[in-house]
Length: 380
Ligand SMILES: [Zn+2]
Image (cartoon, rainbow, N blue to C red):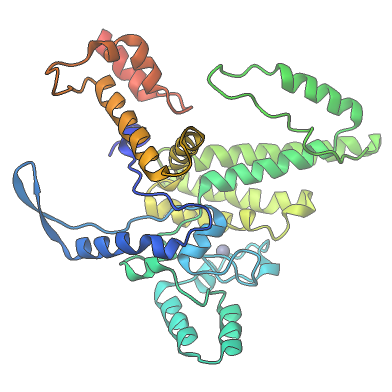
């Protein structure tokens, strides 16, 4: 599917919601059993023709901790808490050129899981889990044909947001009171597109700051500016929509430089999982073509839309209420796209007028370059 189609909400289908505190494995049982049937292939009638359909799990995207759960790896505060490699916690900031020997491999993890499950003494089982950095109960997704370490990549959307959030906090903490007041003033008057929700004051949330010596300011500033420059360069590279062999190399270079500079300037980046994953990002980019292909940004927006529906339900029959909202949303979208309501037998012009078109094409805060280009072409 082309990129501009991929980011449209109508091409994302929600299969279910697990309420907070719900059991993921339990919830996934029907889904997993159906996908298992599809893995073997199934004859289905598509547009009145029999077709042989084969389907499987391609990609698991999740936040950092939840992604580890789904790959069957311990959380990132464990001794070996990276779901892509077996680097120890205290070495996360060491740049290891020889990543081949430290990576996790599906077949090796399989062996380790079977050793853990064969151990009957629970304390020994715990020791094995710590040694391998694996959970005692493997993920339900293991039942499917899926390479758990390659197909559960680190999400670039969360990683970038987390990294920039931390860097912004650290930078703000270095401001003097006067500088901070000025910053807040500029921040408040900062012009943002109308469609964006109001930006939060980045400083008021961090009440601790410290004064720095005037003499040290220039040095410190230089280091901080280098950090921001590096982060900006990396961010541009990771969100690239297409890659060539050269730009993969460039991506790796930026990731490495960022990996080295951030912990050097700010101690709180030392051994941080979010920075450590810079070592694996190139691999994920090559596996899925680009990093945008496996990022969760759009799913997060879909999640947000559904979250926004909850307060409007009666909070008792949530599934029915969500289904009603979802159906209505799809019906409106279908009409806006020029779809036909069978009862009327003609397209609903009210929905396809320019105002509605504008409203529905801009649901997601990204400049819709392709759509605009198409519109321009159609007009000329
Ligand atoms: Zn790792």
